[in-house]
Amino acid sequence: MKKNLVLLGMMGVGKTTIGEIVAKKQDMKFIDTDRNIEKKYSMTISEIFDEKGERFFRIEEEKEVAESVKKNNCVISLGGGAFLNKNTQDAILRNTNSVWLDVDLKTLSERVKWNKKRPLLNKENSQKKIKQLYSERKDIYELANHKINCDNLEKEDVAKKIIDFYEKY
Image 1 (spheres, helix red, strand yellow):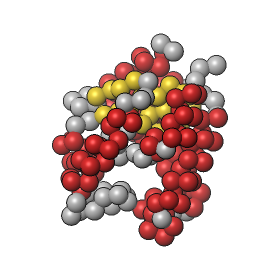
Image 2: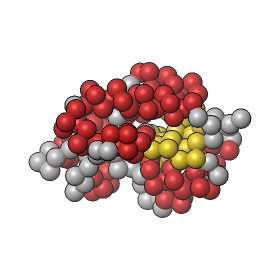
Image 3: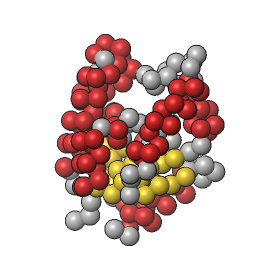
Image 4: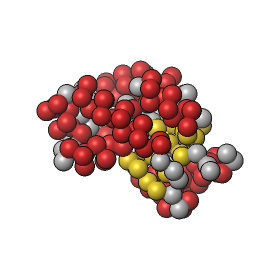
């Protein structure tokens, strides 16, 4: 049995959109850990951050990822900060094939600047915060089994690169 495929990277890189494409093409189930948490609590991630706090969310996120990686035949899209958790990293690196989807900071800033669903961003500091988060996370994202720079690539091209990588394992 092939390992699950996990997509990780910053908010706004396209993990969910591309993950859905890959899952469909590979006849796999698609899991978005953020969506599952939102469904469980009938709240957006921003609302969970506001009402219950980031710590609460990160605990739920760790549990959700742990359950997701135990399933079979899945493409799993992680929230941007999920892979920072050491337990999550260990579970993913031990049990899955992981791909870091990366884009340059300018592209990232454009994609997320008006999105109100991003609890770690606000309009006043979004570009500065994105740079800070990227700087803090990139070395951890590097632990993934594979990296794809998504700049100047269409979604279908990124999906093909992921499938090509995945089929080698």
